[in-house]
Amino acid sequence: MNFHESRTPGVLFTGAWRHKPSHGAVGALLCAGAFILLGRTMLLFFQEENISMEKIQQAAALGVAGFVLFYFGTTLLFSVVTGYAKRLVISEDGVRYGGRFYSWTRLRWIDGRLSKGGHQIYIGLRSGLFREKQLKIDDGLSQEQWERLLGQLKERVLPNHPHLRAGDDAHSVKPVSEAAPEAAEAAQST
Image (tube, helix red, strand yellow):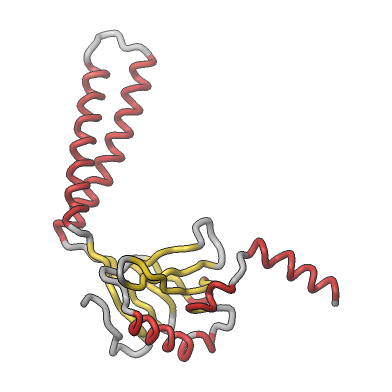
């Protein structure tokens, strides 16, 4: 298995998500599409001596689309070839996933949802455009592993962070837009 309880002090859980061979195939297809678009761009741009503004705009759009496809394709392909893995570490300090770190003060909740035979971990941020994030790991956690992690969170993290909700309590957290009017009404009534 790719995840375990850690023996490192303060670390509650570690896991990883690795790119699959199918991601490499998708990357190769994206690169092929990029080469087709970039080839078409060259034909549009260099085929005639007098180039109209419309052809220049078409060539620019195809070129940009080709470079975007090439970037994503090579990223996927490179990730498969090199065996890149996004590591997940849940500790007493916060949650690290890949290159990002989320301190407990930035989070509203943490939950495990059943997906593809195992529990996948989700977090909810207190602010930001995309507040809910899935932290994928290869096989997910079994019910027993999720309950053990949840117990450790309630024992070691939640007492220090009363705003944070975990597990079934995470669903009782209201979005900020709903909670703000109720807080204003409660303040006015006192």
